[in-house]
Structure formats: structure tokens, C-alpha cells
Image 1 (tube, rainbow, N blue to C red):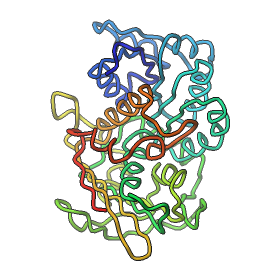
Image 2 (image 1 turned 135 degrees about the vertical axis):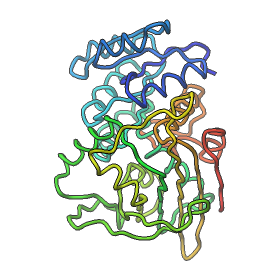
Image 3 (image 1 turned 90 degrees about the vertical axis):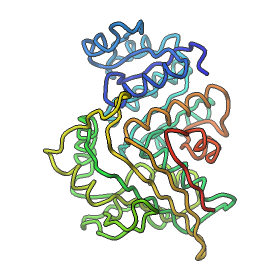
Length: 342
């Protein structure tokens, strides 16, 4: 349990940030609310007894004040291309662990490229993409690997009932497209490859209750950064149900709306991670409700394990590298239902 320890949450008033704040409180931590908009922070803090500490990423002194006295920082503020590096720098100055929920490929790649050496040398802990995209898929792929030291391919297919993107998701997507231009990214032959052709439309045979569904292949998500950062796999591909891709591509698709008392939407998900080696296949499957809401127990479970020393390494590390993947996934019940088929 958190035992009252203070945890800075940057971007606390955002859609996912609010779920993270609630989960921290539920587990006994004391969130310190931070972010760029002082008015929204004040509104969120009203009546809760929580402290609000406004800060902007271009003001290192304000970030230092936001992290003062805390035991860790969770970055929930997109676009992460702008926030990741300054908040990591602040965490390194404060000597506290850093975790984020970034799904932006470029931001994730930059975190590994720019901070791996410094974090490892100082013994710091930096966990990027500790969210539905990046964290959950990486944990599933790692669990599916079992005792394998290497594999030929990892495939992670996302079966979403719908995808009502938040304002933050739309903004992060726009920033990624601006950086990438008309190109898309895939990971093949152990390297990143830019492509200008359209991604393929395929059929993925999901486990029940979904069954076969049309998907967009090479719909590259953060898992394609996290998985090969620690698993010896030259081919990593992610897929997304075609209906969900149409939802997020439509500018008129509304933001998610609450369907229960906890603020979760009625969106459901099934994540199917398949690992192949020499004609043998292993699989790990997770399903649950609301990809934004489930990010909160993912990142807070990770935080709790980091603070308790239940980790396997230091430096910049993906979820499956730093944590015991099967044990971590089992700890997510009742938020996630898990099936392992090694």
C-alpha cells in the first residue's frame, strides 16, 4: 500500500490523469496535482484536500517545486513529445522514479535513445508507456514468451468494441503525424522502417467472444517500441480492429463518456498477444473495459512495485523487462481478465 506517500501526477486533470489520481487515492497514496493549467488544477483539487502545484515544461524551477517531497512522478500529460524529456529531467534532479502513459511512438523511442545511459549510470528508474498501449501488450508478449530466450515474431492484435478518442489522444496523434509526415513506422528485421504505402487490411482470428474480425495490419503502437527493447524478436507487429480505426479517424467521433459510477466508458477490449518460434505458437490474452481507465491500475501497480523494490533492473525499462510479467498481469484482476496459453 502507499502509506500516504506523495506522488506527483503531471497532467492530473486530463481524462487519463483523473483515473490515475483516483487509483492512487484508492491505493493509499497522496497525489500531488500538477500540470500547465492552474485553473483546472484548482477545480480538480477543490474539496479533496489534495495539493495543486502548477508547472510548465519550460520552467524547470516550477517542475522542481512540483516534485519536491514526492516519492515518484507519473506523467499523464500529452503531447508527450513536449512533456517527456522535461519531466524526466525533473525526476532525475529530484532523484525519484519516473513513469508515463505515453502512446506516442516518437516520444517512446526518444526516451530510450536519450535517457538510457544516464538513467542506468545513476541507478534511476524510468518506465515509459506504462499504459494500455505499450505496457499491457509488452507484459502479455513477455508472459507468452515464457522460458523462451528469443522468438521469430511477436504479434499483438487489439480488438476494441469502439474507440472514442480523448482530446489528448487526438493532439498526440496530430503531433506524431507532424513529426512523421506521410510516412508510417514498422519494425522488421530488427530495425525501424519507414513506409509510404497504405497498411494492409487483414482478418485476425481473435479468441472468443470476438472471433474473426477485419483489422488494419502494421497499425504500429507503443508496444512495437517496448517489446524489442528487451525481447530478442526481429519482427514485432500490432493490429487494430478496422471499426476502431474508422472511429479514431473520424473527426466527428465524440470523446468517451461515462457509463458507470467509476467514470469508465462502455468500450470493451481484447488484446491478443501471439509469439511464434520455429512453427510453435504461444499466446496471452487479456480483456476488460475502457482502455483509458485501465491505464490507471497498470501505472499505479507499476509505481507500487518500483517503490517496493519489486523490480528486475534499473534505467529506462519497459514493463516486461522491469517486472515479473505473469505476476504483474495476475495482480491486475479484477480490472483485466487474463488467459495464458504457453
